[in-house]
Image 1 (cartoon, rainbow, N blue to C red):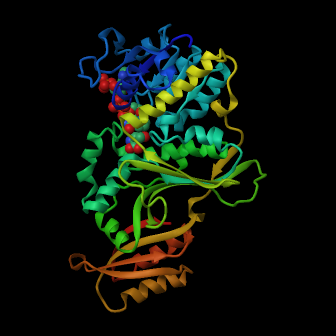
Image 2 (cartoon, protein in one colour):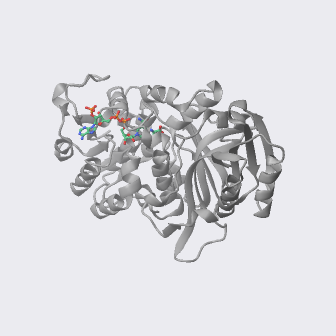
Image 3 (cartoon, helix red, strand yellow):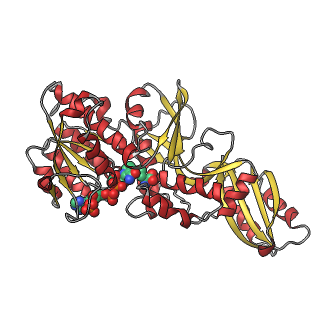
Amino acid sequence: MGTRIGVGLLGLGTVGAGVAGILQTPEGRNPLVAELELVRVAVRDLQRPRPIELPNSLLTNDPQAVVDDPAVQVVVEVMGGIEPARTMIMRAIAAGKAVVTANKAVIARHGEEIAAAAAAAGVYVLIEAAVGGGIPIIEPLKQSLGSNRIERVSGIINGTTNYILSRMAQEGVAYEEVLKDAQDLGYAEADPAADVEGLDAADKIAILTGLAFGGPIDRASIPTQGISNLQSRDVDYAKQLGYAVKLLAVAERLNSEVHTSRSLPLSVRVQPTLIPLDHPLAGVNEVNNAILVEGDPIGRVMFYGPGAGAGPTASAVVADILNIAGIRQLGEINGRVDPLLAASSWRACHLVDPSAIRHRNYVRFNADDTPGVIGRIGSCFGERDVSIQSIIQFDASNVGAEIVVITHEISQGQMKDALTAITSLPEIKRLAAHLCCL
Ligand code: NAP
Ligand code: HSE
């Protein structure tokens, strides 16, 4: 083997400590791990007790000192947040250093700027840990599936919400009751609103979209609905009707024809979704994530595994460092980058009007328990060409009648018109829930 590679770590929290732990225990791993030397580590609070022992001389509260340290060849950014993470990544690139980051928030917003700077500097920025925790999905999209025309990427890509939804389904508890456990287990973001409002999943599907379809999309335009308003009774009713509720992220092209116009039209969205219990995603529970990739000619492949937490995420981070270490050992870094590993955009993509998107729907109304109310709801749907798959009244004496409707596939524009009409009926007290249904 050859030269040792200096690693500078920005952050020693859940993920950073996991990375340091792997670097400290190279035995039984790929021999290249033993070539990685942790030379500097930035934290915010030098006094905080750490789950891992490191010489004090390695620690600093100045991230720039890590990036600028001449002994650091690979900068590993696991601080989180937008700033100073973005500035440190750009500074490392400008200094000709490779970067590994788990920071999906930065990549979803500044990925193009970062990729352009990296290409100009001839360095790699690798992001396997940014999506799916320990699941390999970034490199497969860039490399192993590169020959495919991708039709759809969909999946469960937030571990915190999947953990919460699994516990809600199993124990019938409200989401607030299990969020604290997800935080204690190291799954949640520093601000868990990013998880429960669907923003983290939107960051991740933005990244997957760019890789799968070849062009960046506007992160801010992704329709995003989280689970913070989801009630345990909807999870329960869904279960009784044969569905699991999951926070689903979807990116799909709208027709399967080979697209020849300048910009590829896509639908990208994040929303709680009813998934039939016999669907492969319905059985993905706890902190696990799963991503289905559908393409031509591969058909459908599913990537499954732990989507958050110290060990799985550190596994992905260190794999990226090893990719860079391997290339360095070939003497191939600085100026010449492997185009597949670098993964630059190669076309334009844009998001279509969400009202045109068609899918099935689950809606729950609170209504007066009067004769004919189900018929009137049915008429409102029928008059707007919305065909109903099932309409059921659940027993909920404290709120009057609870009427749950599952529609066939319709456009969201049609659905909105029908819901406006139904909520104007005198017997309808309120629209209590509206979820997507696969
Ligand atoms: P974390 O536990 O909050 O750790 C963040 C670390 O960064 C802490 O050590 C903190 O220092 C340090 N830090 C933050 N701001 C800093 C600053 N301005 N200067 C110096 N140090 C700073 O976060 P995490 O869960 O490890 O997540 C890190 C990144 O990985 C995030 O981008 C997250 O989205 C991503 N990620 C996390 C997971 C997961 O399962 N947790 C999975 C995939 C990706 P102190 O310790 O002194 O506060
Ligand atoms: N908070 C994120 C999640 C961490 O729960 O999925 C992994 O990206």
